Image 1 (tube, one colour):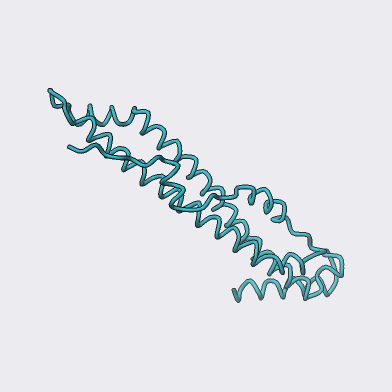
Image 2 (cartoon, rainbow, N blue to C red):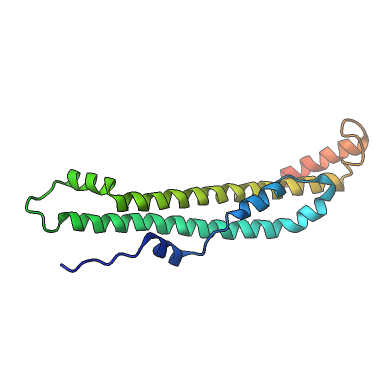
Length: 172
């Protein structure tokens, strides 16, 4: 039987996707807090922020999936190596135990765990930006109704603002 040439974990994952800039999380996290005095700026940047995070999330998912596939390939290679040339045929449970504890399997799983964590973090950021977009819409409706010009606890403008917001919520 021919020896199998295995690509390294880094090479395989690199071929699947570009490096993910997790600094993006640090850049965007502070922008999740909405400054109601700068709604126009927040609304203008929302689409770009959401696209940047969505793109990074897609790449992270691609890397996570590639790392998971690499585990399967690595386990298959180990299975073949452990079965070939043995005088006594090992049991399935013995083979499985040897694979699960082998350094190559553990290294591949470590890479997968890291990629999964990155994808989960970016997925959470993407969801937070979706929520931010909805909040910007609601705050824009409140601003249009004059909600922020009068004390929020009394006045006709305040009631009107709440009515407009409730109406907008029921429409969407």
